[in-house]
Length: 464
Length: 165
Image 1 (cartoon, rainbow over the protein chains, first blue to last red):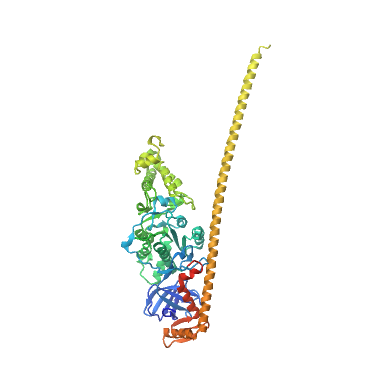
Image 2: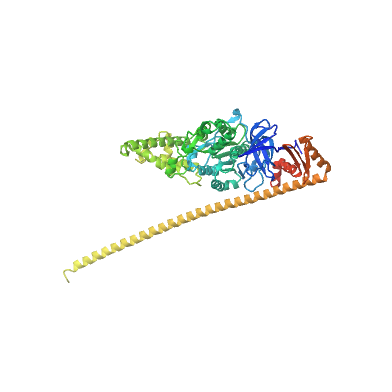
């Protein structure tokens, strides 16, 4: 026996919703992890929400159903939740608390880490560079994901953001270097959970995936733990094991709603739309855990997915997320209505670190110029469409008419791809050329002449 | 000789030439149709072969994934069984140790009393070890609780049961 015997507290004063109020405690701190043993011998877990003198309020992760005031024992761990970390997580499917949900033994690790994480020393941060290729053309070419970046997907109810997140989690690679994906599903329905498990089965069986699933009917406090568990596991895989790790977290709006519920239970003063005032710093405490560390081989790249209630980009969750992250991939109902998958709105989407991860030696020499020219041409195309609404097609110049047709070509030849189609970067870039070359050479002023000479027909042979 | 014979002959020749030309065109048409049909059939066949091949490859890939998934699920289930067996063995070992070693058993009882102070009520646990109670507090030093804590502390070393150390 090592250390003092753990004391269990039996004085349960009150059971209220998911909360247990324990009296007679001493030396208990906020956010401390607790183990609750029921009369039947069943074990549950909880987090300390509040402490006042000898009273501790514990939120039970598995809910208080079936619990009794007498016969319930609560033991406090003396620290916030820690979990084992190591490669033992690879290939495992767990619930939102990190307990095995795949029929296997508990996940074991060589060491343990606090799920709250330790911030990376700013002076030891290495700027993100080199791409993570997702096999999704619109993302790889126009909003390239860079190792160590945080790039959210902004979506709305009814759009296929889960399909896109799963497709990226299934296909993403890092140019043959050791790679792993940690997928944290929050507030998923059981049908969505089945879809995620099924679609990621191959990657899971290849021991390249850790899957955490918190379902919609799981307690909200567990939903607050899920992304932290995912990031803790990812940090160890990246910075201790040397892997490049992509953390996909979906749906962050469900997470923020859980935060709101717990904040209300703690009696905190509500701020905008009743979210707690610290929503920004709480989201930052998750997103800022991505990055690269000088002298260490791996990286943590974060792809959070969030749904904008009512498609409102000024809603606190997308708004505050946008302040923290380095760009966004925006899914659009209009593009979806036009029948394109993935319904990425190229003009609203942006990867701020793209320049650091694309170009010669990283992706392909023509990539940055090609992406910039495609965005510029699409912007012109949208302006022309608005002009055509005002003055009619007949008043447009031949060059304007070409731009008008560009958006259709973009959707059909470049954007649209199969939900299980892993498109190579070369194929995606060639398709971008194909779309741009529907315009006369004179309209492609952002592409250097030598690139145009290599890809475009001479000016006198081009279609008029 | 009839004066119309040259006309008749010429008409006949023209009719024959025309018939030959029609026949030739018909033959050419037939050949072209046949060639077209053969080319279409070849293309359909090639496409069918391609689709069949792709279907077969996709099916084989699916099967491979299912097989890998099933194998991994079976391995996890086996690991869970081994882990449960280890837990049972450790519990049995601790029970045995406490039953056979009176000094250890009384040390556990003393530790339970020390944890909650002199006013605590110490009860011997059925499986060995002891629990201590005082108002609002409890310490569980029963054999099974001690065994479970020991297994938790073992951490990744338990994984050597299924992985090389």
